[in-house]
Length: 67
Image (tube, rainbow, N blue to C red; front, side, top):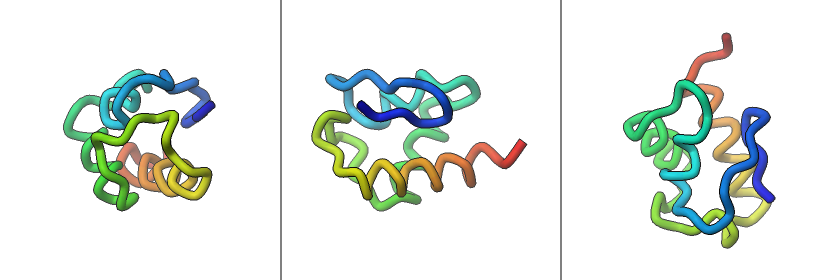
């Protein structure tokens, strides 16, 4: 299960769609986090490796800011 920013991301969705479940992350920021992490936005969340999830976490922090 991928948990990013305290939110459980739905497993059967594409990564960029799953990231929009986080408050403050829309379509543009979700795609920016995926490209910043070097992850294909059309990959399913259940197919992510742990290193990809960690890369998305750090990219998400940079995209949203550290507030």
